[in-house]
Length: 84
Image 1 (cartoon, helix red, strand yellow):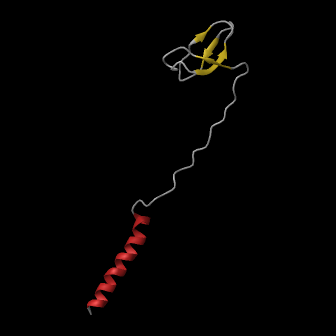
Image 2 (image 1 turned 120 degrees about the vertical axis):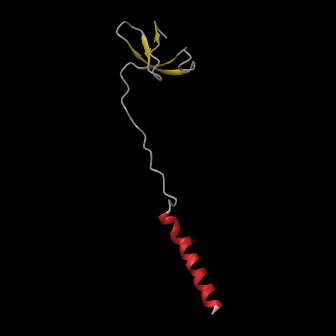
Image 3 (image 1 turned 90 degrees about the horizontal axis):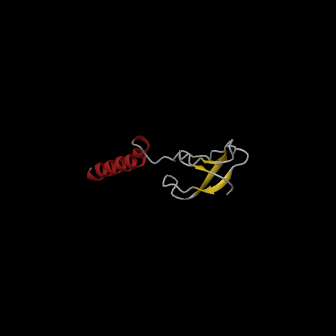
């Protein structure tokens, strides 16, 4: 009698351990993040941006109408004049 009860309880616990993660937030694969591609404007150059916003790193600069270059990194907008 006790063997049957213990067998039933252990069987129930084993099935619970197998099935429980399916119902209580079991491991799920993370959503796949894909790369975002975009076109770079013609005449774009990678120039050093000497501001603390860009951390003095080389960032992408696009040409302006007056021959200067505008930084496009992290909302910087710093203007670099002349030839670089």
